Image 1 (cartoon, chains in turn brown, purple):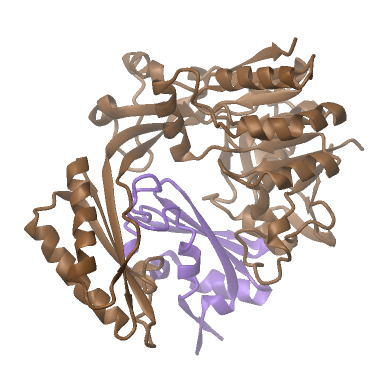
Image 2: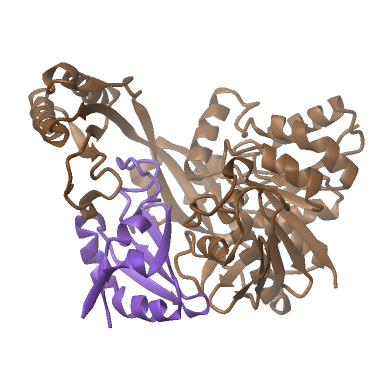
Length: 454
Length: 105
């Protein structure tokens, strides 16, 4: 039976590089997926592109490709990356330039475009498309239309498959869903199409993609297995060996750090999925409630009985818009009476913020070491704490208001109790809020552009 | 009736999609799965999180792998890009759920 080995090389912008290089050198893989995008990333990249139309992609793609392209070319491994971000064509051009410098003549770079509708929103609204907010239920984007900074649809595998059919050796996409980076190569290799007889198989590809797409997050990173996961500094990224019948074995390079067992796979199966019997992706709807897991060896788990349904008629569209500023400050208090000192400082800063008439949409005050992470769920401390921090943060409409927060927290250095310690002031951050919505699939035609290294 | 914390029955891991916090609970064994299936109801979860969850709570069952998916709406201060939470993406929400007390036979 035909089998395809696909690795995961990145979970986010800034992830480790060496485990990806190790996968390329020793993983005996045919494909390696690189996800670099998150909800906020597209807005950051769009802003960079506005300033410089030749930028707006994830700059990591250059050092990453430099590190792996010669081995990929020699072994026939195809990297599939969404590092194109807000400017996939520019990223593709840079990869072509790099490949040429490295003497890799003949390499074909497939660039997938079409997800970016930033410049088309007015046209779409004129056609009557509404962009109802999935989180708040608001019907239309009128309120935010002058502040929009990015609008990208999460597109599927269609054009990745097209690029592979045309012989691409490297794929660079814009906001392709993380998942499509894995579904595309599997559909291409096995000849699966968006037809009913393949729904379960595409469901399997979606499930496998979901398990491995966050790289180290299924091999002992971010894990309940943290106590037993060995040598996390040498962590191995995952490999899925997928069979034509839709079964898969998840493993990593023998001897690499981290761990794969039933729990690390479950941890990622349940990760950010909402309804487990309807995991909506652009290429299909996976059902995780019938699959079976089996540990078949050291750091090896077999996944069988995966299920899927027809792909949704709408795609998810994420619209980013400017939404004010966040000002923040932190100050720390030592034993004795660390918590009491922090409480006294809380009262002082609240009164100071009133006195300077802070105009904030929202203010939050946390006691670091007590309730910063668990908020209202956190129990009162039952022992004497050696140190407690106070974190004051507010969201404002203007930068000047946000700066008041920073200044007033700084004053706690001297207004606070004896021993209060102050780090480095935190910069004011501009906020980009997201407006999640749906858009009919036919409104987002994608295509693959092939650029050959000559 | 004996009470224990969820920490003694299951692992948890959480993440986000916008303002929605998704918590996966992984029972240590079949017996524990039956307990958490019975005890971890939307009402009790919402009460456990006090004011932190502004919207609905949904609980989905995955009997095949003895897990529950607990979905908390309007729970992350508006979502990662605009929240005032230090834990912008709600990675600690799953661990917060492990504080919850449940009855075991």
